[in-house]
Length: 545
Image 1 (cartoon, rainbow, N blue to C red):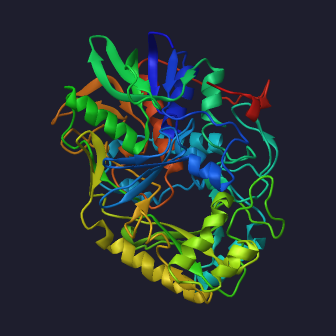
Image 2 (cartoon, one colour):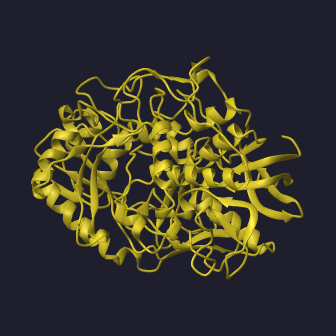
Image 3 (cartoon, rainbow, N blue to C red):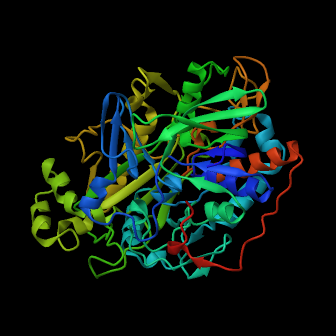
């Protein structure tokens, strides 16, 4: 690592990948710092022992597992959060659903007016779709889990539709010049794609950034940033070495893209070191109305458990993690809208599933699954639901004795959870099954709400009294007014000031694409977005770090 760069990007998820790609294309000397490690295609866990090694639990004074573990669970007093830890961030372990929110979301006064009115949001979504290429699997209605969702949809009088997912269903060379194999429909999207078919940030924006000169460093955790006379100093140390001596790197521009929790935490620590910021820092946390729940004992075979690659079981095709969804917009009240998606549990979890469902006494036949395996026993009818909707975004991220905490008293009493429970109960009954809200009630997770789509904490606002950053992602320099810290940006889910009612990956990407257009204009920079088509290499042999 050099002593200084034009741009230092902290984090490598959607916001970090876009920022690194576009600014490297603009001729800037770019450094990317990621706390996790790079995992090559084929290296994601597909067995339970491997998955356990990739699990880290963090909650107050309690922590366990490797600090570079891929699955980072933050256990809270009020709500739990799952985030990804690795080069590519959350894109490595999400379901990959690429949806644009209802237009009413951006009409909400929570957003700065310019977001919806300057014309660049549409350009941002266009560029995000070009790079991530969400598509709908043409044969989705033939999948068992889609047919089960079709049966469940009778409860709402609304047929399901194929979900757009950032997955390549044919062999291709993507816009970053990386060769990708066609999806094998193994269902293991959420444990990490071992085929190379999922269009993660590690397959798209980051290789593009690397090809244009960005330098990428992994397993380094940023603690805080410090303002210098001509730029910024970024303080970090090795992720896995708690007592290691800290180091630093300087940058004229810093883009915080460490995720909703990561970027907010860095700014909170920076404030403790004297950086002036808005009093809104940490406020406006949203779980995006998320629920993951199950239906058991239905009449139909679902095939909702992944088989991995190579497959652990040969039978009916599983499909991508999400292939179909029931869209339930409420035209009178946006916040009552919801989307119900069918999902697949990763194959690495298969040995645990009978134990989870036996422990609650919810399925007597689950004992058979311990003998027959989940691919032939009663758990073949296990139906997983992913729901996205809207909450009031009134959670608060703070530091308690140096540890990140999310305070959201009585979040479980929010009306959204009752609405979703009612809807999923109807869906389960329609297939002759029982709705199971929390099979993990007897574990550390308990019955508290959980989300894999954390948003907010550094929300956009017209000025510092209403937000932490402006519509360009620039950080406000104090508790009031529109003055900003020159060269300091936040570009990730933290800037989203409300729930958006869809899986957020496409929105985060689009907002960052938009922010990069503004940054380039403000600094007289230019970049093209033409795809790389020549000299493509196998993705799994192309380490970037």
